[in-house]
Image (cartoon, rainbow, N blue to C red; front, side, top):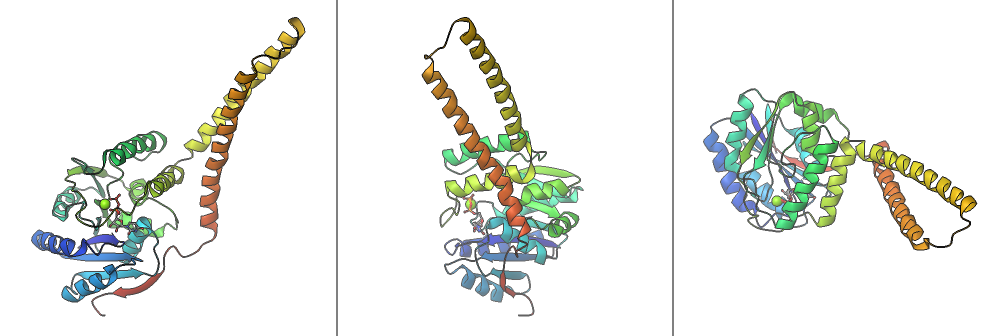
Length: 308
Ligand code: UDP
Ligand code: MG
């Protein structure tokens, strides 16, 4: 059985079109399936539209209503905990991932892979988004062991053992594709189409994208922290040498008062680096803080299922 998991946050404008294309595509696959919508605390009519859809197709539709917005990745985790398929496929609600491509992922899974990611053939986002995300892709590739070609793309398939492993994690701020990758024995990727958002607006501001990338890097790698200590180490050796040279100069040539601005420049640079370092430490400390609180990661308000 295939479980399709879709996080929904304020998507009322695009949902009708999604229902039309998604159910058609799944019916055409001719395999048993369920579609798990996770309403991530939408403030528009999304929840109402989802419950209508549940009434139209109660046999294959599950709706999980989260009480408050928990974020796209937490919503997907809520779907993972509830889904029953041997294969779970995640998908965005805005039709940027064409539902017709699900079959391609399933075929690849049947070749014996337990995780199938996807690469967008041509990305339909603004150039700034595309460029920034390519840059982050490269950084993440360098500093983590995670080999995902196109990290920003959520159209992915996961096998049951991977889902079970994810369900056993209690991480609070995470990045589902990367987490899944760490559990996959035989990952693969396929190339898929990508479309422009059909309706509604992107839920990610530049700020939340930066946040997401910190989740991805500091959540899966200690390298930033290690680089930072290496940097501090090199700098302190350098300044020790500088100090010795100045001392020597003072003895040989006499005291100096020039080069003041060079010193300023050096100082500001060091202050900047230390602020960044403190911030970086804060990233890790913050994650520890979130983790030790052991709060529920999301709150389910209601589940619409076959029996409801
Ligand atoms: N989403 C969510 N909770 C959030 C933000 C987004 O469930 O807090 C969902 C959203 O409804 C969509 C998917 O995550 O189905 C991807 O969001 P979006 O299309 O806005 O991201 P983008 O494509 O702009 O990166
Ligand atoms: Mg989108």
